[in-house]
Image (cartoon, rainbow, N blue to C red; front, side):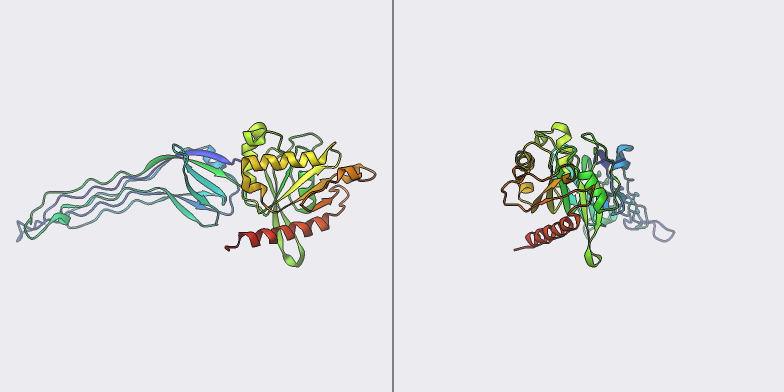
Length: 331
């Protein structure tokens, strides 16, 4: 099951308290203070794991609590710090504070770690308060509480190319032809309800990742048709391919509808390198001139069923990725 959103409650451990103790033995009945410090409470840490592709685990369990630190002891023995709890998440996970909506972290690299709830510091024992003029301190500290918060996890797929189009535009069929992915394919709209990723093998052992995004409809940027859930996955793609069914009455209007939806959701999306792909040319005898339209983007006609122009499409995808890489480089 593909889950791309979760809300969980994380509570870090409280620090252990410091100890009030004085050294006592047979020939030292009035020894000095020897109360040790308390250990730190455990923290809650999120860690990216490239082998994960969903937030499914967090739909079953919502509470995560770390243990408290050990209390300090006499003879200057410090309490042990509690173990941290490490929660694995897929790369591409955005972490937000559920109350304020503030972004805590953007976890994109495999192995990247982020502390989302820090454990409390251990309290100091009375040995820490001894001074030349205050030799028998009875002060000690209680361990500090750990952080406690609700956080939201949002997964945004990381891909090189994002396939964007209306429902039933042929995105899933294309992905199944150029990669080993096996998305559900049927002759009715909204067959794809979850994003699918496919690795496309290219020349000289190169490869790139293509994401099949569920179909968008007009008003998607306002949340219509689960628009927000789908649009978030386009944010991390390097480049876009607008897939338009050649049988549409007005392909140009469809393109502008798609582009406007992306722009209204995030102006940055509409500025990504892109191309227009007119699909299903196997269903028409000739591509009519009125189906082609003037645009500043490259345009290509394909048939995923017959395989028409798919190699050329891969070339254009690869060129888009190279263009995006140049734009990503610091100026």
